[in-house]
Image (cartoon, rainbow, N blue to C red; front, side, top):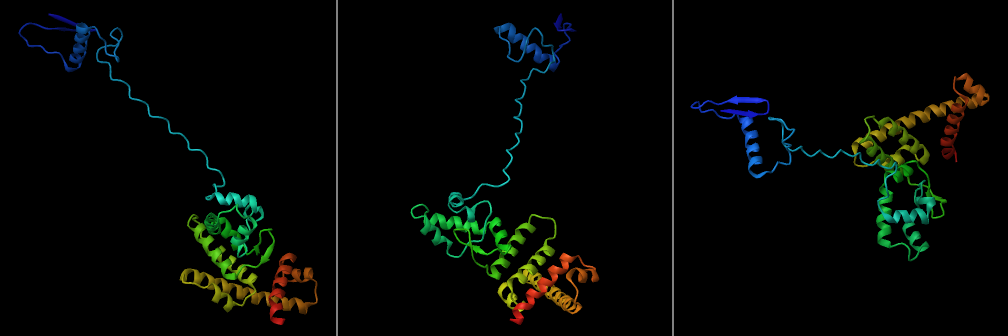
Amino acid sequence: MQVCCGNHQIRQQAGFGWQWPPRLRRWHDVRLRIAADGTTPFFMNSATTPPGADTRPARPRRPSRQTPPRADARPPRQHPVLDQLAQLAPGLFGEVLKPLKRGIFQDLLDAHPGVLDADSLKAALALHTRSSRYLTVVASGLPRHDLAGQPVEPLAPEHVHHALIEVFRRRQGRSPEDLVPKLRQRIVQAFENSGLGREAYATLVMGRDETVNAITAEALAEAASRAARDEALLRAFEGSGQTVEAFADMYGMPPHDARRTLDRARLRKTPRDA
């Protein structure tokens, strides 16, 4: 007997017990079903599909990975009351922040009765004063401001120092660069701006973190060394009888650096002479 299947011809002789190969047997079974009930599997076209073709249904394609929307340069505020405050007091809570005067909570409630909820305002101010943006402003040493945006009182040296340390910790955690040298210079500047002596400043700012205490001690030692150099330069200038430009040329200094150093030395000297 001769069996035809596409281009393949297989001859079967009686008594040899011939069987269909597995691949052709599946095709043969499908052909028998088509002949029996007249149906055609949805994945097969009997007129064009050759024997042995892959008749499995195609796998559904995975959806393409969509690129997430680009985040804005400035994250959204975390509390809706902060948006209110930016409208009510833009000089304090707008794009440019300023250190807040003590008692600003009650000032806001008194200035806007029935507009601000006390509990919500308290929560919003807590978030605001712990934010990196606000701490950076405090670390700069700007004075505290009232609702009108006017400076009313200086920041306490310990508050500036605390803000410096907190901003340093947050930035160091995200940066591969060693930021300790920059922190020391910022502490030197904060110390000189405070107008305090070395021991008085250390008493105010030293805490339980020994690492921070060591950095602060190094900064104060550097400030003392610089103060000694500045004082020596001022004495030399006062004894020279030269102009600042001529004196700077004698010492190989840019005139603006010499003038800034002399002014800094005079500023330190004034409280002791007063």
